[in-house]
Structures are given as structure tokens and as C-alpha cells.
Amino acid sequence: MGTSAGSGELSPTSPAAVALDSSMGGYRGGEGTMDASGFGEGIVDREGVLGRYRRLREISRNHGDAVLTHVSRKAIFYWGKRLGLVRRKTFVADGFEEMTLAIDLAVYSARPRKTPPVELYRRTKRFPAGSGEAIMLDAMCGSRFSLFVVNRRHAAAGLVLDDLFLEREIWLMDEGFEATMPEGMVIASRVTKPDDFHMTTGAVVPITCDALEEVIANFPCREGSPSLEDGRNVKFIETVYRAAVARGLMETMRFE
Image (tube, rainbow, N blue to C red; front, side, top):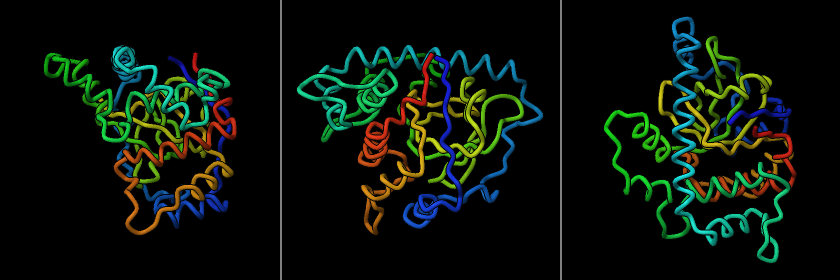
């Protein structure tokens, strides 16, 4: 699945960035404070990395399709309704891009007192240890959600992003994003790490200043609030996705 993105840059001095820095403890606005590991730049081979990535992406797509066969229509409607995508028992999403948000929650997030479907799926499968299928499924079950800023192109392939919650860089592999995402663009996504690089799980939200201010207003981080650093705060993910739907942000994303 190829992906492309429109603009969504966030200035370090904007009110949203300042609010993010103070209330979420993460934004550094490109100050260069992230982990400068290099991710093998100058060493890794582009074709070799692309080969591994494409194979893992195919496996992740197969796993995702298999999980969805065990997710009930009722569960998808549950998440769609929470995101404002369901009216009178009918989906009113503007396109597939918005539907990916409900599907992401249906696969990776647990409803109250439930286990995430992707974890239930793992419990029923036995793949050879060390196989691509086993590695990818474990990575999917260990996925985390965060806000990211596009720092630069990786020297071999993909992008280097600043993870705003963990305050460090990650290497993200996505051929479409490598070609289209501008430096400084802010995105929200759930990511996996099946290799030296990370991959998205499929749902990616471009974040604008207005959307970020809305998220902060609707999800204030106070002392004693659930942590965002582990990337599993379902309420926060819902808040981000609802803002994206309400503001039509997914129209700038294209899945090919």
C-alpha cells in the first residue's frame, strides 16, 4: 500500500507547539535534542532495506486482514460512532482514509474490559520462531501511538522522525511518505518496530495547529492522568482521530 501526504507543518513557536511542550512534555521544535543514532546511515543498502520492508509490509497486511475477519460489524460500528463516522446506524465517512481510523481502533485497541483483537489473533496462531510472520505479529501487538515530526530523509530509505512523546528519533520506512512528506510535517500514527526501522500500522493523521489545539483542549494532561508515553492511551487516540474527522484532515492523505 503506497501512501502520500499533503501539508501539515507545525511551527515550533506556534501556540499549539508551545501548548504541546508544556502540557504533554514533548515538543522540542527541531532543536536537535533527539537521539542522533544515524540508524546505519552510510552503511545500510537501500535495496536491501526496501526488500525487507516490502516483505514485512505484505505480512502485516495479511495479518491485518486475518484479524479483521474476527472483528464483528458491531465492533467496527462502535468505534465509528465514537469518531463521529456513524449516523442512524450508517457509516458516513467521506472516504476510505477516514475508515482506516475506525479499522485501526477495531484491530489494535481494546473496548472496555476487552482484549485487543490483534492480541486475540496472536493467541490462536503458531508461527515458526524467528519467521517474518512471527516477528511482524509480535511487533503489531507491541505497537504504540505517538505524535511525530518529520525531521529529514534517511540517507538510505524512508524518513527520520522526532517522536514527541519519547523525545527521540525513529527511522520510519514508508515509500510513499519518503517521496511526499515535507520536513516539519506533524503526523499522528500507531507504529510497529519489526526491524531496525519502524512502520505505520496504516492509519496516519496529518496534524495541523488547529487540530492540535483542539486535541489539547479536549485531552488536557494533568497530574495523575494516564501516561501517553506508552502509546496505548485509547482515549487520547480517539481524541486525535475525532479531531481529524471533524476537520476533514484525512482528505489530504491518499492510499493507493
